Amino acid sequence: MTIKASEAHNLKDDELLERLRQAKEEHFGLRFQHATGELENTSGLGAAKRDIARLLTVAKERGIDVEKELKASDG
Picture 1 (tube, rainbow, N blue to C red):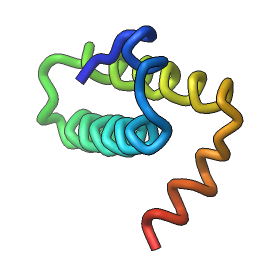
Picture 2: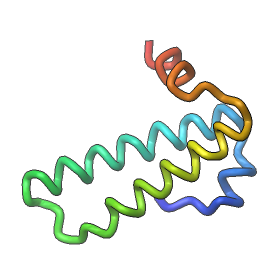
Picture 3: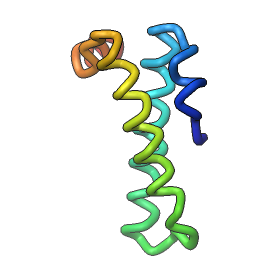
Picture 4: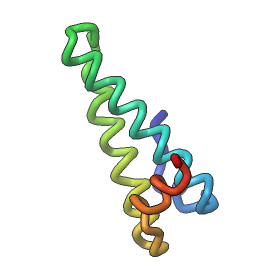
C-alpha cells in the first residue's frame, strides 16, 4: 500500500482512519503469513509498519483519538 507523508496529510479524517484500518489489516496478514512460513519477501512487514506510523502521526497531529474512532466504527 505504501503511503507518502504528503499523501497522508492530504487525506480527510474519515479517509485517514480508513487507510489506517487497511494498513493494520495488511500488517496483520503479513505477520500471519510470516509466522506460517508463507511470506517470502519480508520487506512488506517494515513498509506496513511505516505506513501505520505515518498515519498515526498525522492523526495525532490532528488530535484524533484513533483507538476510540476505530472502535466506534467497528461496532
